[in-house]
Image 1 (cartoon, rainbow, N blue to C red):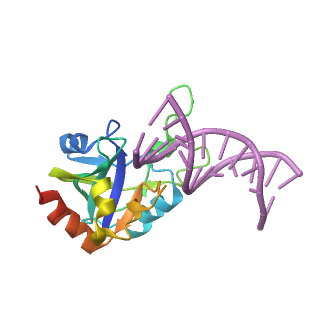
Image 2: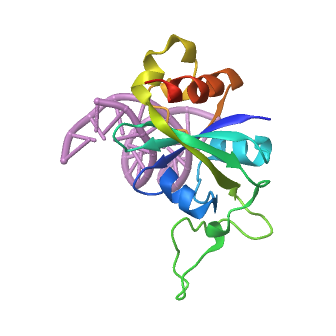
Amino acid sequence: MNYWLIKSEADCYSIEDLKKDKVTAWTGVRNYQARNFMRDSMQSGDLVLYYHSSAEPTGVYGVAQVASKAYPDPTQFKRGKGGEAMEYFDPKATTDKPIWYLVDMAYVETFTHPVSLTEIKIDPKLEGMVVRQKGSRLSIQPVSEKHFKYIRGVLARSK
DNA sequence: GCCAACGTTGGC
DNA sequence: GCCAACGTTGGC
């Protein structure tokens, strides 16, 4: 059992969208490090902090759960009707040799008290979290069990 | 294989 | 909207 943090732009696909959909394929990850985490380390049942970037405030808004094994991201093969590249299309990928992978994400809960990045940064108990690193653009990050439980069990329930 | 140029992310 | 930080690309 592993714990993760995934980022999504709030007005692109928020946790409320996930709540509506219940499960969604986490398409469009085009970063090798993030891909490797999904492909090599994520397991069904892993719990995930759902982080909104470009939100007010930015921070963790709830919890999701990994709902599948990794499989090739279908959007890397998608061309439009005229053969033009669609979003996330990768000309170097083939169905025999896919480049990008994804997992399904399931909705778990929305925090009544979202945990802002500011809170995460000032809390000594959360030292070492990847999301605290300046300029960290990694959209899928491993999170320690201790940090996960502290954010979900303590910070999200305070106030 | 180096590294400058470029495009993108994301906090502010 | 700005811009620093970062990952990727491509010329050499």
